[in-house]
Length: 351
Ligand SMILES: [Ca+2]
Ligand SMILES: [Ca+2]
Picture (cartoon, rainbow, N blue to C red):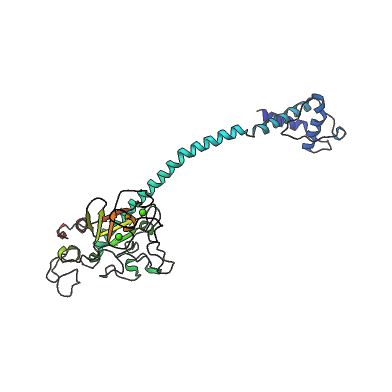
């Protein structure tokens, strides 16, 4: 209200035919009466000296209101500045807010990344089950060094079959295109490729699930042994190859075998493939670990064990020990659990 009143009053005061402009005219009034009222100018507002001869005649009461308005404006300008004490208090408050909010935001973001990772791992497992049901084999991983149109497809082949009885690699990135998935599902919550490992014996085409006839000469071997009623995934475990069969050892616990494993290398990303279809082959192998990390052994260096390319993996509790950290996230399934998920418990045998 006060400011509005001032503007209106100034509008009445500053009128032609003064030879000065609007602002200069106000300064003229101010300069003329400064001596009359003995008022000391604000140090925050410089008032130029004005010759009384250059100023128009004063207009009584309007001059008084003009001075009030200008002083009010000076006070407003003064209040816009902060003192050192005020700035210190603001900085302290901002610091406290950051101390409280930033850790909470960081924890929330990490929680979301872990949740996204687990969600993607579950989605991959469900998609694999559907792939097996539709094609009769586990999908072979895409070699991490694949480039071009084969990237994201089984065996890294653009025009290949779903089941070709032999994988080019047993460990690689998820063939998300062949599995009908968007690319982001093949990555974890930190944006890195999820590693996929399969049992080679279960990537062989075993046809219909469950089998409906005896194996005969000419059927695919070794998934089908002549005379055997069980084929492929349903084959007698004693007749199946155990070469490169996936095993997972729980730190301080036992070891179990798996048909399939998906592995996120966690927040630190140690060992994650750096696959990129745009780069040349040979540059996408498991990246080197940072120096000083404990080598893979039965007692430590478990993340190295999960990125050394062999079929043995370790599942351990979280650790932020700088020499032997562990934040990997694993999801795996045994053969019997897989065939059960397909609705074929009759396929279960010793394995
Ligand atoms: Ca890790
Ligand atoms: Ca390994």
